[in-house]
Image (cartoon, rainbow, N blue to C red; front, side, top):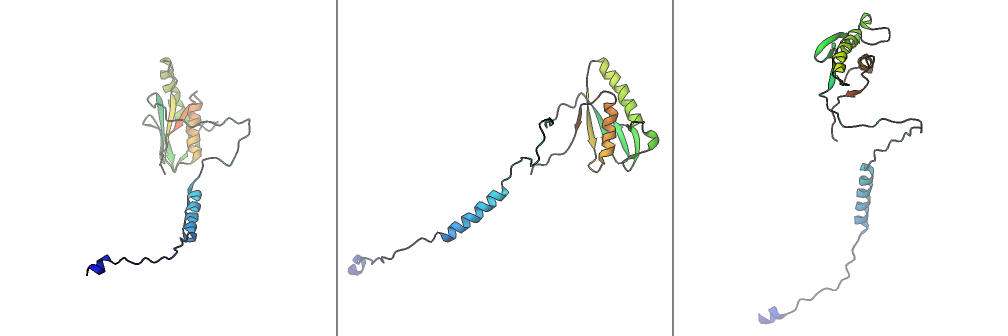
Length: 161
């Protein structure tokens, strides 16, 4: 029995080669997926030198701003309905010759006079339903711009992806 414990195990001297071909294939596939998922935010469209593009900034304080809301059935200024809409369409009799919303422009004019007496130059904050056509939002912004309020900020939902 002692002889059996003292026996040395015989080691096989075989050359073991590492096959890295399969591993290299896997790393190549992983590299391709990583490169495909990596994207830069560079626009493929270049503007000419004469165009100065606006910059996106974080939301300014809306404490000193007028609020315009555009819904399917109305346009509201500071929570008060100024225009009735029918599926985002204003009645032609409610439009001025320049296409602005007559009642909204009048209410903004009155509110602007009160603010300008205090020396404030407020901006307009627009809350528009995501299904609202651009045309009605443009009319609301044009109604504000008609009264000298051309600093406009749109409120949107930002989803991190």
